[in-house]
Length: 346
Ligand SMILES: NC(=O)c1ccc[n+]([C@@H]2O[C@H](COP(=O)([O-])OP(=O)(O)OC[C@H]3O[C@@H](n4cnc5c(N)ncnc54)[C@H](OP(=O)(O)O)[C@@H]3O)[C@@H](O)[C@H]2O)c1
Image (cartoon, rainbow, N blue to C red; front, top):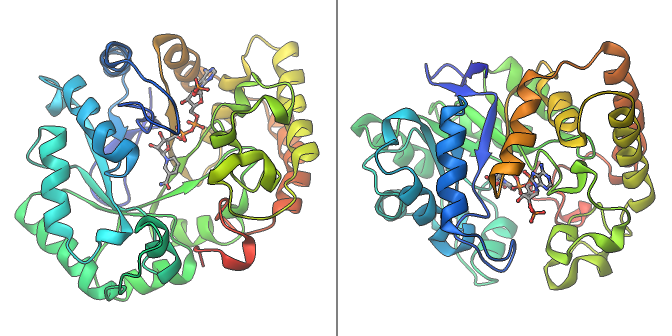
């Protein structure tokens, strides 16, 4: 396993981090056994993973609780990250304390604002309720006070665009990372966001490294993808069930052509689709770490094997080319859930 620094925080994270959204089980991912979580967390640490990412909103706090149980006796071995819902950004201390209690710890290594502060993001997280957005400077000064007290070691952004990052920098508070969707079929952040992050030493943490399972090659056609995992703009509005709210036509043909390219490379090499997909991310020089959700030991094994894979320049170029049509169709909005005219990332 390799490690990279989170911005200039002095904190080193493994280049593959464990995405813990499914932990605790819930409507989005279905049931998730605690035994599998315990096994995955123990094995991940044994294999050098030190970066674990959760959020208060994942399964209504159950992801944090489940991860906390699995980390019992191992807290000092990990870089533990959680996120505050943007709907709670006016009261950072209160919601941090709740996360700490669910996780069974007294500090976080990384505390992240889940989405930028804007009315649309807040309305989404507040279940459509009208909540007055707090001032960006007030929010980040609350984060900074908690950092100075030692309750958090580093401040993180998530889903922030260039203007939104500039607004944070202008507060004088240092944010060391920005967590953003990034994978072979989600490349919008390359246009402006990753160059800005690199220029300002903000670590880029990739979320959704496998496009929620799609890039493992396990789905033969769009109709095979469960509705929750098909509610992003990659899929037609109708495909994503009640979660879907973008009203776009999707890019299903281009999406599966990109997956076919990964499958073809897998057939020619000893590498699995998951390994190729994650290795492609790790070889992008602007990336610090990619998160991958692993629900059991088999998925963990498959995904961690990407850390040892090395893709030739030729393979990287083939994947880059195969991913262009879907990128072009979905455009440069890194918000893959809202209609691009209503993007919450700018
Ligand atoms: N900041 C944000 O707004 C944001 C947004 C999304 C995610 N995240 C973070 O990023 C992490 C990763 O994203 P994600 O979990 O949404 O998606 P992901 O990592 O792209 O995909 C994870 C899912 O794919 C399936 N899978 C994983 N490895 C597999 C394998 N080797 N073979 C077959 N299936 C496999 C599993 O679900 P099934 O077995 O059910 O198919 C797993 O839950 C999250 O856990 C979360 O920590 C952050």
